[in-house]
Image (cartoon, rainbow, N blue to C red; front, side, top):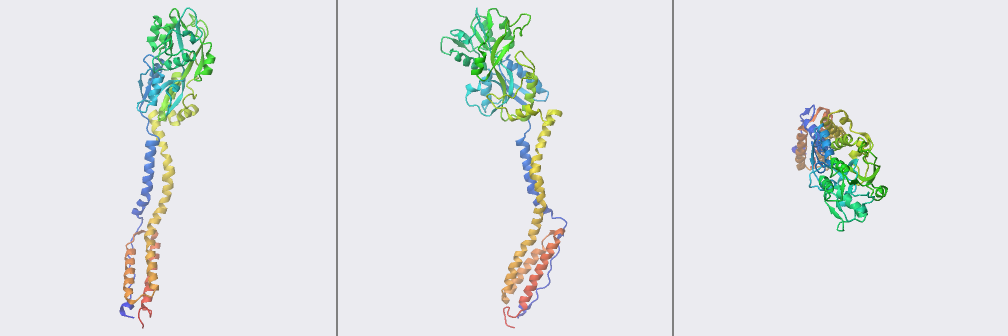
Length: 458
């Protein structure tokens, strides 16, 4: 064999490059999991359960109406928890509903009486926080003899409430069912509240339809005291309730308004819808709880027409009860809100939400870190076995003398690369095994170079 073919390849020199921990590999293994978990926590914190706003915009009714009076009570109650209630004046239920149904209008909640939604058509994205109170229809009229039916107002002048009010919508529906419609002999005037009361007292109209969304209780009491003016009894109340499912039959007992003067002088049957507190679907759960809690304080007592504790109630009519409201009626406020100030409870409630991504992503992800770390380190060692196997296959083919130099260079390159590998001490055994395998291949190469027939005849 030529001297080049018989040349010794020399000893293996693989300098040790060990460390206790490969911080780079640990960072690359842990980093993606931490980043994904942090992103999930951030998204959960801000999008799944954002902080509740400090302002609620409430569409109520005209100045002096019962809607406005109730809204003012809500404002005082919510202020205890640092929530500001902005009250918007409106014509009443129909305008409130139109505002809520208009995405471009900035409003959160509003009072809406039963039966109004049907007149508006499609209503989407709204939910009910519950029925809040009965709203009786009071029909005052001037007549020498009592009337028993709305059909008796045919051909007269009627104040039916302002357009946009629930009074207006209900009056038109009830009059139509009695054969009284716009465009006929009957004059239907859009007068509401004090204007309707004064028009009736002064004889400018013959009857006035009054409800809480457009009239104050003081005006109704004025009409009860006015001579020659009567409050319509509804002996057909049961029939109205059967025909208009959103109506309730209400009884005003004799003397319930004034016992001394015996007002009314006999039991009266009245009809009227219930009023719901309607909200947009995106109302924050914490604000939903506060509004219902305020509603209990405002509407939960006994009145002439309701029992104590009857309202608010999760009764579905034209709008479904929101999930948050249903939860409140079933189990009350959340644990944190029962014992902590509102804003502290809100922060604690949102913090609890973070547990979900931590449990779902971070903990299982941390269990994968050792596996990823081990894979990254060992892959730097095992990747050279492919080069060694290829080199060994070339050796088995009995290389010619001129090929030995190339094989030598390839082995030297592998030796140099393996010598530069830096691994933790816990993986030193695998690195030393690789070195032994490199020595094994070196021995095969030396044997091949010394064997006769390896490129020349001895």
